[in-house]
Image 1 (cartoon, helix red, strand yellow):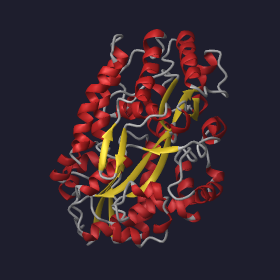
Image 2 (tube, one colour):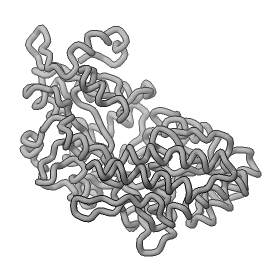
Image 3 (cartoon, one colour):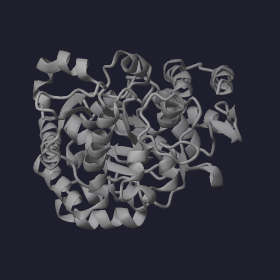
Length: 448
């Protein structure tokens, strides 16, 4: 095992062996495994400890940690150039497209041999499977969107941090109060790197809309729905009528997390299990953190956008590397969800390194397995559980709606400038902007 700390020295060697199934001098199978960039040392230490444990249990495999973050815009170039890790993670939204284009390895045979292969949630499994049910990418985490809020800013604004908003009217009113009383952004929104479209779609779902309609193999874009218009009008009112959204209108996932953890944002929308990343990458203070269920306001059709993460293997990986890669996916991502000893060992290692244990998440398998795992790791849970109950008390009761399935990231990218216009142009014509995107989005869907 090569520690992540020596990556800078080993870059050229790692690039040369990526996806190539290199064999070490002592005959071991070398597998490059991805690690999120920007982690604090405690998270890196926890990862390296799991790598060491895996190599001890699998002495013929040598793991090489590599910092890697999924980026749809550079993936194809990295694949062609052989610079991808052998094992990496991708969002649910990209799984089916990668499978259709054969840009990830077919590991369905190895996955089918795992003892819990038939126990995945059917809805979750679809994200990484072919139409006939063969799993090419393994679901390792699932989430529903939630409202994250800063309890300290709530208190400073004279609001009760134990009673976060439960409607969009309350979000607007409390965002305005936070902005007026603290000088910080009461509510902020991602707008770039496809995240603007992601959050706009989240809001459209919450207001009862959808961004696509499927009829067999045909997909119809509905990004210009009345619900999307209404959602963006609500954002526009907070920005221009209330001046409660601060001054940064080019946030993406990493930068909005950074400002939220730093106490510069009162509320924002992101995945419900985001606390672990906020702590590992942004030194989030536990006492500042709160999370609540996303308010739904669109009647029976309103729902929470659901998503998650898949573990995949490079399409260039030869058979020995594929087999070793699936062993790592099983060991690192899945055993801790399915077996007591692995769950406890992972929780202890994570807690000992000062990282979060027990952040809210949705089950990859079923709720019974989720509840059982939580009892196994109870002694190591170190997150502010009580402060998360406005979300966890409701997260299994809210209707979960999958992300759009066709040209997802491309359509999100089309919506980014719409959201940016709403936040930077007082006179932005929301229906007109969405009508323009509608035409482009339909052209994308017609290519499928």
